[in-house]
Structure formats: C-alpha cells, structure tokens
Length: 69
View 1: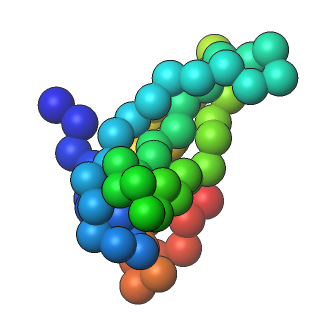
View 2: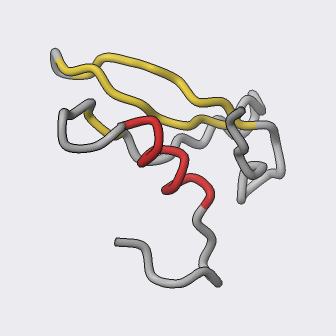
C-alpha cells in the first residue's frame, strides 16, 4: 500500500503517477485539488533505484524533517 502525505500546500489528496517525459518513463506524485495541482519532483525510472520509492520519499518529506539526500 502506498502511504502518501496530503499536499503540503492545500492539504488535498495526492496520487502517484507513472508518466513519460522527454522519452523517459518515471514517477511523480501530484495533488488532486484542481485549484492547487502541485507536482513533486519527477524521478526517471532507473535500474539503480525504484522511481516510485524516490517520488514517494520526496513528496512525503517536510521542511522539519532531516535533510533529504
């Protein structure tokens, strides 16, 4: 099960999406609120790490968390 925090800007529901950009497949988390629609960092699919996990980790990070690497 995917555990995504609500949008840090509006509190709306977020969803993990699988999309292609510039010919590469990857993952991103996006807010569903039509007035917000903020999008997290896009992670290109790679054999060295799972793009879903990186996208979720980036979305769930908050300013008061430890530094994100």
